[in-house]
Amino acid sequence: MAQLNLDDHSHRRRNPLTGEWIQVSPHRAKRPWQGQTEETAGEEKPEYDPTCYLCPGNERAGGAAVNPNYEKTFAFVNDFSALKLDAPAEEYNVDDLLTARGEPGICKVICFSPRHDLTLPQMDAPAIRTVVDLWVDEFRELGAKEEINYVQIFENKGEIMGCSNPHPHGQIWAQHTVPDEPAKESREQKAWLDKRGTDLLADYLAIELREKTRVILENDSWVWLTPFWATWPFETMLLPRERRETLLDLTDKEKDDLADILKRSTSKYDNLFKTSFPYSAGFHQAPTDGEEHPEWRLHFHFYPPLLRSATVKKFMVGYEMLANPQRDITPEKAAAALRELPTERYR
Image (cartoon, rainbow, N blue to C red; front, top):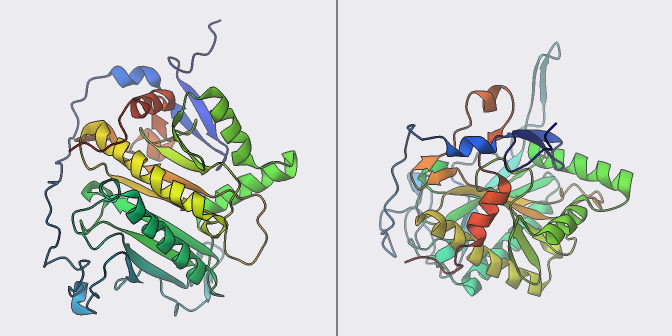
C-alpha cells in the first residue's frame, strides 16, 4: 500500500484551534480554469477624495457628523452599527426551537491614515505603529466596559471582500457574547492546556519553526506562516513568539515588530499577483469577560480569497457548503510562493 504523500494524495487535515477538518486535494491544482473571473479595482486613487465619508474634514455617510481634520489615525462609532448598547438583554424562546437573545455591543470604524490612497503595505512602519497603538487603545477602552465580553478587531480589504469604501480602514465589533470562531478557539486551547499543561499555539509554533516549510517571514517578536490546516488558498497566520493573551500584553518592541511584519507581509501579498491584495483579516485574543484565560495566545488571521491570479478567486460552494471546506494548492506550496516574493511592494 502506498505511503501517504501530503503533496500528492487527497487527504484531510485537522484544525486544532477549532477541532474542524478540511479536505485537501493537491492533484486538482493542475485543472484548467474556465469559471468566473473578477474585475480588478483601479489602483490610482487621490490622496484626498472630497466625496469620501472617511477622509478628514468630510461629512460622513448619512450626514450624521463631520470628520475632524485628523493627521494620523481616527476612530469613531459606526454611523450604521450592526450592534448597539441599548439592545435589551432579553430572550425569545418558542419550545426551544425558535430561540433568540438580545445582543448589546458597539461597532467602531478605524481609519488607518488621513490619506485616501494608502493601504497598509503602502504605509511606512512608523505609520502602521500608530494603527497598532490605536488598536491597543480601543481594545482597552471597549474591553473595560461591563457589557462587553469580546472585542473583535478586523479589516475587510478590497471590493470583492465587500468593502464599501476604498479609504483604508478597519473595524471593531465589541459585544456581550464571545462569537463562535473565538469561542471554538477558547474551547480547544483550554482542552489542550488541561490535557497537556502547555500552550497549544506555543507547541504548534515550535513545530513550524523546526520544519520551516510553512514559515514565510520572521522577526524578533513575530512569525508569519501558512497554517498546516489553512482553508483559503493563501491563508496565513501571524503568531507572537512569546505568549501574549491580548494586545494589552505587548511590549513596545513587540508593537514595533508587529508594525514591521504587517508592512512586509502585506507587501508580499500585493506582490503575489501585482495587485492590491484583498482579504479579511483580524486578531483573535482572549475574551474581556473578567475571567483568567491562561490557555489563550493572541494571533492574527489573514483570509484572502484569490486563487490563481488577481482575477480568479476561490468560491466556497457545493461540497464546501454541504460537507467540508476544501482546497487544492497545499499550504506548503502557498507558503513557498509567498516566501520567494520580495518584501518591498511593487510599483
